[in-house]
Image (cartoon, rainbow, N blue to C red; front, side, top):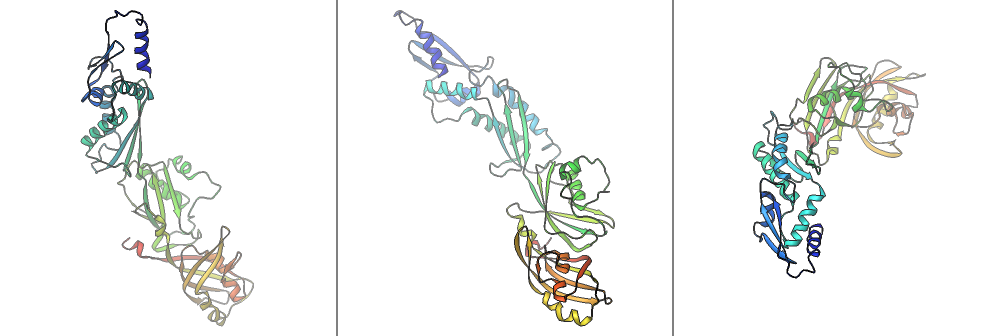
Length: 401
């Protein structure tokens, strides 16, 4: 122990002199460290003809904390309550505040406690955190939540008592849905395009001339939430030339470390796209990705002609379980109803109600494994010209949305 070694060195100088008077050794302690350690403990100890006396002071540097409490608490409290997380926002927040302080301060306190045999009291970090939490809560009317706070605040202090404050806000999970009214609008970025965060953050345009629905969604939410990290989880897609009507296609959005929690959750771009968002619990957003879609598709028969009797025989065979391969796995879903309308001997429309995620063009053309497949059932090569989503049939989990 550093402190005990200091005392032993002082004593060794006078070891041979038995007439040595008592050596006085004063340790100056700030009011915070004094109250924490010596409120119910004797302030003086004599050991090996050395008297160690604890002196409470406000004018000299504390032997334990180097005046950490006096020099930083007020400044840190002021910085926190004036940060963007709290200024002009009267909403009730839950917070957690933690700190990282130099290990030398722990070491000094441990040495002193060992000498005075102090046990069962909070250490310097626990005391420091408690004071800052109380000060911030009193000023902001926030509540303390150690497990799942709205804002997590981490304070880092170095040996020179310089500090840095980092904020991490609780993620927001949104259930979104979009209606697409314009053909030619692509749903998402291409796989080989740049990272979606970089793509949006480098775009300073204030207008929605974006080329994909994903870009429009991210651009809107970056501006509304102030976050720099937003992820979208899709549950199916449609052709760029398809429309999405009815209740709109659902999708999940995860917003990490948002600056603002209360923001606009609707966007309407006339004759092009509308977006709606609803905040949902973060425990299992996957339950919101199960729904049915009602589609109308235009189908063309290639290098052959079609009779009405051909369709009458096979249309009912599309109803029931369907299997297809996705990422080396066999996926099973259902088609609930099917109907058709002849246009001519080369073209017809088909209406389907089916689970989301079934690849429509694959279902029609059968270029990849899928059972049943319309082309195989007709024994005629068919092509999906385009399909529109007329409605989204939402399950009970989405009731009221």
